[in-house]
Length: 412
Image 1 (cartoon, rainbow, N blue to C red):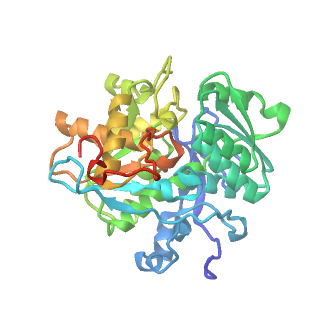
Image 2: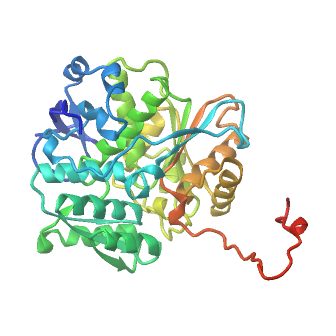
């Protein structure tokens, strides 16, 4: 930690994302009285007078370099596991238009996913507010990040997973110190158990968007992207969307940066990418609805975006529409084809959720909703190493002669 980090922040209050009523900072809050997510608001004028782009550039290459934009007031409460800046990788070999394509590889973060951004902030704020016991539902990566940061902070954690959550995720949650259960349902069923157990078990509900601070952690994706692109943003951002915290957080970041004059001109079109087997946001977008109905029978290989109902649905849809973006669904077949293509052509092993953004980009480039000349950032939200990969069956017997001229793969 830099010695200059006093931990001072510019939080002024919290605000209901739906109707705008205000809530005091520095107090424990869940949802607003309307049952909707709370957004952290800042004294942006004072913030702008206290920090500059140059000051940020001179700091350590980590999430906390944006501390003035974040809610933790006391540096002693920050829970760290090495939240590095993630690379923005040019993707020159992928089939694309004439515009530049980048992959923002969030798999380099602690616990191997972008969930580290939100959970490090939520757990740091839980520590600051004196919360000692927490619970949440997860499709996998969020639970792993929660377990790691809660253990680091000395906070007791309870995690509930759908029964078909990838085995590696369930094991890493347990290995990193959380108490974890499989549940015979989907993530909203797990969330219902968390809510029902609050009074009896005495835990705080850390479900997606049911506390205010995961958005602020995910907001750093937008701050970091803006800095990496020299404060000039791409035309389009493709984001894998389940609960949508990251899309909401990035749009909030861009609006805050615009408000203080650090970026100008047109903001990116935000594209919410979902799987065809679970696309409540896409359906609501296409119907022109401000809210998304629960998706029945949700299924997809991209478990992280298998969220049948999102409490922040209206915030996702608002960001998409305000940015002149859209919501789009892609098939599981297209997702896996895109994953294999990125690995073979770019050497980047995408997770299925990240691969969905590449599949969506290619689909919408063909449809015309994305123009060939537009610059695009694809978010890979986790390391592909956590997911099953195609089996390799080729072998050699080193005790027998080998015809090296025949060592070719099909299609070589």
